[in-house]
Amino acid sequence: MAGEIAGLPSQLPPTTESRLSLNFSNDFLGSGGSVDDFRTAQIIIAATIGDKWLALFDHSTLTSRKTPQTGRLDQIAGSLGYRFVDHVKRQTIFRVVAGAGFRTVGDFAGERMQNGFHRIVESDVIDLPYVDSSDTDATVWFDANYYRAMHNSDSNGFFGGWQSGFWLRGNSLATSDSQWDSALGIYAVSSKKSVDIWLGARQDWRTGYDQDFVQEATASAESDIAIVAGLRWGALVLETVQQLNNDASYGQLRFIADGNSSMAALDSWPPFNFEFGIILPDVQVQLTAKIKSGIFASAASNWRESLFVDARFGEPQYGNDSNSFVKTQQLSIGMEYERRLPLAPNWISFYGAIAAGWRREQLLGDGILAGASSNSVDKATFLLNTGLRFAAADLGGGWRYRLQLGLTAWAPTSETQVEFAGQSLPLLKKGLGLNLGMSFDYE
Image (cartoon, rainbow, N blue to C red; front, side):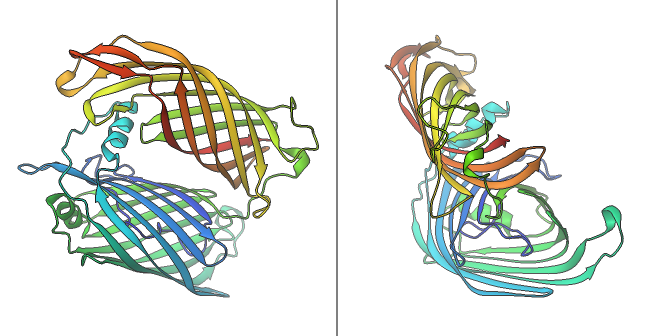
């Protein structure tokens, strides 16, 4: 199970500000094991705009695997919030954010994403039909956080310099279709420099989810009290939520940028970069190594020019067929240009890249097609990348870490038909994906 309230910010102690965050929730990081049911996966992208505004996008995959009714559904939420209360004084922090947005359910590639991840980690493919629900509702919500520092440690060494306190969080979201989600939590928090540790309890309530059995089962499973333990170490956040009555658990892996980390001065763009990314919804892993160059951009240019090698691999699902997967390998060489955004100096930059290489694909069967395969085919391929990078943390030893949000497009020179399970099917089709990842820069 995974489960922040869809359309609300992810949980983080008020002692830490986040201007951008990427949140991946799943039923890992918990003693309940991987059950691949209910809100089985959730991705949240949230960004603070200026000092008061918050924009948020949420994608959740919902499943119900219990007989006699089995099925799946995807949920997308988007919202815009405003911080009405921002009281920070000595030992007290009190913040209230309220907002509005939308929430919709339907087929939003959740099956492709879930099974694509499962093929990478060699887990079971989940073959469930989508239920016939396609509602879109307006949402209104609030999120309130109160923190009170209680104790400061004066001792030396590792146990010195810690500030301890308690944190209360309450939030609620209502939809125009009479759905109502609420949560209330109380936590003990200890903080020191770039580290936060919290432990406490959380109670969730869900009502109004009678449109279909998938939403009803998910809401019932998420309505429970749970023990919560979390850790922030710099730009990395780990949290596990252990339910007490439903015998399930979930966790979140989150990457944040607080806007305080900055890139180096103009004359010291990092000479070497290594990137890791996940491409969605046709899941592929991207690994890229870059080196600074000066073929077209002079040393005085505002643009950083890089030569790079880009490798990708995965076994994304073939369209909506959960019995067929495309074994994919791609290697490209190209050139990238990156420049800081003038409206957000020293922590946000824009990038664009073009490359050429080779892409190989092969159809593989699963489920009722287990053991089936096609011939592998390959063609020359062109690659285009664009997006934004956000300075997140200094890692020491000359390394820096940045978050990356982008789009990637690939275009093989031609499609190729292959024979598979008695059919002639096209491979090496053009594609477009969302690239969520991180960049490690070495000075």
